[in-house]
Image 1 (cartoon, one colour):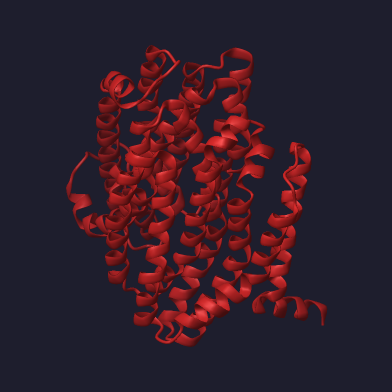
Image 2 (cartoon, rainbow, N blue to C red):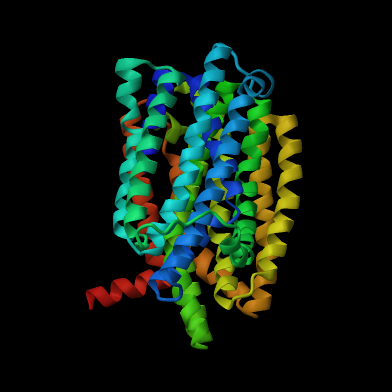
Length: 480
């Protein structure tokens, strides 16, 4: 992720903002294409884990994988064909192409079709590898591929051709390499069947998996609609160059969720286990401690993105045009993602309790609140309007729905959770950032601005740690 963020200004420098808009559109299409997954990737991982745990025999497992493979291939082929044959219409009727030649946009869209399909097919093989618990290898391979996609594209743009055609041809090569390696490793992990025995594609092995797949699909689809609707709408409204700028703002702001993600991945299985052991008090302790940790880190980061959006963009890109266009958008999206990172905690509580009914209702409430507001705001006020809709929808959801979840699953805790775990843990960081905003002038030096921002981030987190009970206790234990 870090490499991907660092290279964006170089992409814009060599390709231009309009061509980079195609890259942003490609990322958005890939996210929407994942909606067709219908929960099959987590289902694959679950079935692989069941086989390795002895809950399924080898032949049944191979039949399930063959059935899933056929389904994945069919959807990938249909999706790629749809995008390929509609590339002309999308380039001329949907996207607002300016100086870029229409034929370049059409060719880029046609190249996107197989790339998206191949990357989506990789989900099946990642599921097999995940279920076999080969996570260290998979994590390393994912890192290598992500670095190839972003960093190794630069020599192509610099020394060969800084065009969308060169960019997407290179991405197609990486996608082919990725699926070949994942498929090879997956088949090595599959059980061996007797020679001469052939496994045909059948629907029957998938029938028992429909319930679990649809449950996982609904949650994933809601998240996709929440995070991608604004991008789809703005791809129609904005010029392709402005859409490229908008993509940059959202990319930076969404980095906030990368901070809270690893913590949620660690606490959710622990909370599930404590719930199974009927240790409700310990479960709530883990929940509140994790909230403090996230608040101490996420809130200072979000505040710096909010108050110093111009300085961050200037230090990062050096493009004054980009700074003027998207600094307000970055401020609003950072505020929304900051609220989202903390507001996700009630889901972890419901997950541990094994009751997602309120989460589903709340997600639908959020969708009905967000989507109409994003459509109206985007049409009337462009990307700044989308930013306001994103921020206000997250804020309203947080102040209305989160208390209802706590009232249902942890009665009497909400006020302490807000004032003690979040506000008390982060007020000093807030104070430091606000004072810095008032006294530190904007620097004309990109390097000096970057140094100032890094020192401010470190300082605000340190001060927040000092006022947070869990961090203060940890420091005291280390010293004593």
